[in-house]
Amino acid sequence: MKKTFFLTSISSILIVTLFISQSSYGSVLLDRIVAVVNDEVITWSELRNAIALDGKTLLEKVPEGQREEAMRGLEKEFLSNLIDMKLQVQEARRNGLDVGGPEITNAIDEIKKKYSLTEETLMRSLEAEGMTPGDYKARLGEQILLSKVVHFEVKANIVISDREIEEYYNANKGAFEGREKFRIRQIFFASARDDSRKTAVGARAYEVMQRINNGEDFSKLAGEYSEDPSKQFGGDLGYITKGSVLKEVEDMAAALKTGEVSKPFWSSAGLHIIKLEDSIKGEGPDKVKDRIKEILFEKAFDTKYREWKAGLKEKAYIEIKL
Image (cartoon, rainbow, N blue to C red; front, side):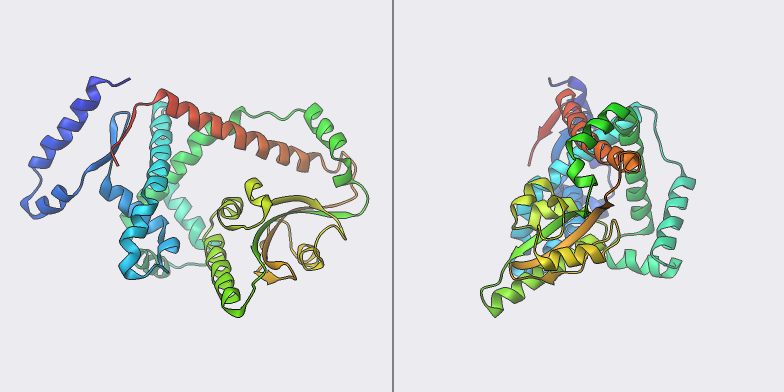
C-alpha cells in the first residue's frame, strides 16, 4: 500500500537537490531513483557503484566496448540484492541495533591479521578497488549490522533438539558407519572437446577460484557456474565413499582438510573444483552429534533466512523504477 510519506520523502530529496553546489549540479542531474524501499531510496549511482565493485570479477574480462551493455545486464540482479540489504538494515534499526566505531576498528584489525596486511598494503588494496577508507568502513559497518540482525532475527531462534539429531542419524546411518566417507561440494566443467575449449574452461575455473579466494560462497558459485546436476543443491554431492565417484575426485577429497577448497583439477570427465565439507570415519551417534547438529542448523537457517527475507518484502513498500 502506498503511503503519503514516501512521496514527501522523495519530494524532499528533489528540493535538497536544488541546493546542492553548482560544481556537482551536472552529476546530480544524471542520477535518478531506481527503487523506493519503504521511506528510503536507491539511486542509479548507488546501483552502478555496487555493480562496478561487487561485479568486478564478472566485468574484468568484458571488452571495453561491451562493458556498458554487460553492466546493464547485471542491473536487475544487483538491484534485487540492494533492496534485500536495505530491508535488512532497516529491520536492524527498528530493533535498535547499531554498530560502533570500535567494532569496525576491531573487524579491520582481524582482517589485517587474517590476511597478513599492514596498514599500507590495506590502503593500497582499497585504492586498487576504487574505495576510500571511509567507503570501506561504511561497507564493513553495514556488513556487521546485517550479521547482527540476521543473528537476532533468525539464528537465535533456531533450536535443534536431541530427537532431531537422533532421527537424522538413524536416517543416514550409512553416512556415519563403516568406511571413511567425505561430504563434498563440487563446481564442475564438462570435458573439453578441443584445446581451445580446454583453455576457455581453464579460464573460467581460474575466475571462479579468484572469487572463492576473495571470500565468496562456494555453494552460490556452484549454482552459478557448475555444469553438474548438483548445481541446484549448491554443488552438494552428499557423502561419498571409495569407489562411488571418479578416482581423481576421491583422491583429492582425501587430501583436503575440512573446509578446504581444492585447486582446479582434471579428470576423464572434465575440470573439477571441490570443497570438503566433512569427513567421517565410522563413528557412532555420540561422536557425530555436534556434526549432525551443524548440518541440521545449516539446513534450518537456509530455510528460515529465505522465509524471513520474504516476510520483510511482504510487509514493505517497494517500488522499482529501473
